[in-house]
Image (tube, rainbow, N blue to C red; front, side, top):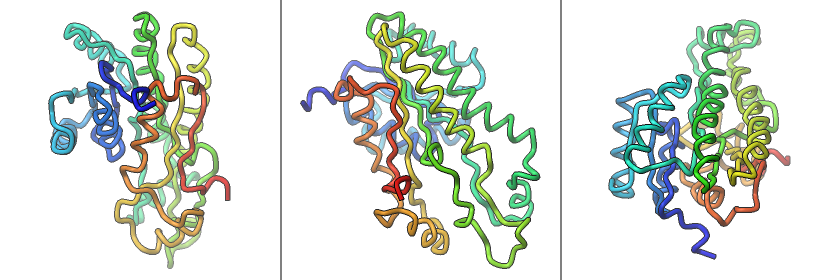
Amino acid sequence: MIEKFKLDGKTALVTGGAGLLGIEHAVALLEMGAVVVISDIDEGKLGQALDQISSRTGSERIHKVIMDVTNKTDIENLAESLAAKGLEIDILVNNAAVDPKVDSNKGLLSESRFENFSLEQWNFQLNVGLTGCFLCSQVMGTRMSRTGKGGVILNIASDLSVFSPDQRIYRKKGLADDQQPVKPVTYSVIKTGLLGLTRYLATYWVEQGVRCNALSPGGVYTGQDEEFLKKLTSLIPLGRMATKDEYHCAIQFLYSDASAYLNGQNIVMDGGRSVW
């Protein structure tokens, strides 16, 4: 059974690789023997991410590349450059996204509200989080379908793909109702859209051996303020947020032959919040 979890000889691409969970996804894959390519649009943060990952796993099987997930040419160029080195992507982690944080800045509070949310931000965030996933899947999934080996696509969604944000946990004392911070509409729309794309892709290349699933993490503890933590954890049956490494085993399962019969599903890991 343990052999089924091994990823030796596999090459994985993690988009949004400089982000908090992007780093953890890369570590999880490296632990099981995969060659991992992390991509991001931010060169500085990508270099820092590479250093963090290398300090934990070594640097022999980790590569970094600057790539814009909204630019199909960038994605195609990456695939061709890897192929020239004898590498084809077997595992695609669609992790790149814009995660708008609820900020105490009054201007940002006002702009995040649905009444004031700009079309510019709507287009930008959907372009990265949903269109970027589509383009990466289109390029890499097509190649997977033609290798004869198949592959695995995992879309990183969110617990907010299955329920609405509880805007009460973001409320700040002393602010008028029309100035209260909210989780912007784009996040829920993107993450819900990823589930539809997951189901579509799960059947599209199935005869060529390409599987697709989604992982919907809950909130990750990164030192959030006590007031917010108290509100949020009261909604979670386990009574806490996740630690950043608690999704490792799920990632390893979803990409390996241990999950060979799992396809088109959304795995919700939110401490039970979605069932309460």
